[in-house]
Amino acid sequence: MLGLTLRDILGLSVVGTLVTVIGNLIASLLKDYFYARGFERWKSREAVLSVHRRYRDPLLLTAIELASRLIELCDEYPPRCLHPDFLRAADDYLRSNRHDDSHFLKYRLISTVYRLCALLGWLELYRQELTFYDSGRVRANRRIDSCLQEIRTDLSDGRLNQASDWHVWQDGLLFRDEQRAIGEVMITAIGETRIVRSYGDFCLWFDGQGDAPCSPWIGLAVQFLVQPIPCE
Image 1: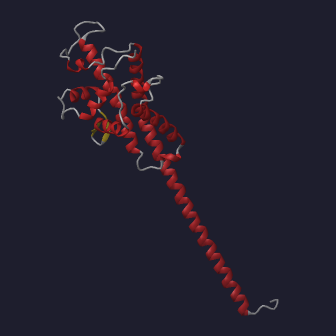
Image 2 (image 1 turned 180 degrees about the vertical axis):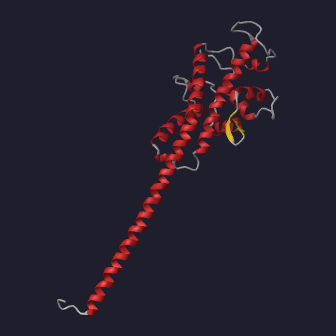
Image 3 (image 1 turned 90 degrees about the horizontal axis):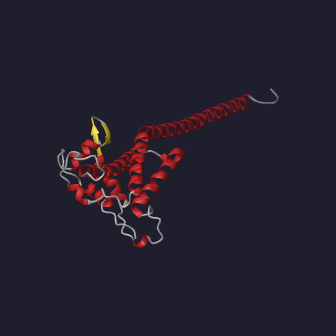
């Protein structure tokens, strides 16, 4: 056979078989590697998107509620309800249908504190859920994180104040880890589901009538909001 001996033929057969086996092995390894990597990325992406879907509406709702209240307070600045005396107001019911009723003003103060704390609670839950995921690869997560970072920065660095003489103001601040601590104490559980405390539960807890006295971390949120100093 064209001058090839049996030994040569057997040698070529062995080489051909060896090449085929090695090729199949490489293809199998590459397939398993890229398939596994792709599958893990897909699972991670789906997990991140699931977290987004779960917390999107609560985050949006609490952000809208807080923004709406802050707009109201800015329109009537300095707002009368943000005075520490109303924390100790004894009126549990509306005495008169007036904007200066002590019960109404106490409600406005506590509900404003609640709206801020509720937003920080949902932010902390969202952050904890994403801890073990490579969420930076998901474009939606990068956009959300950018917005949340701006909120944290405004609260901790005072960037909400755009006045030219901001450095002489006495604005309250909530530093980043304090924001997280407030969020943590706002988290409660119903069965195996973790959620943020309801307003009713918060009011009982705030007044020390719930299952535990009000946390000092909530006191930081109160301090951040009460008794704003009028600008001159």
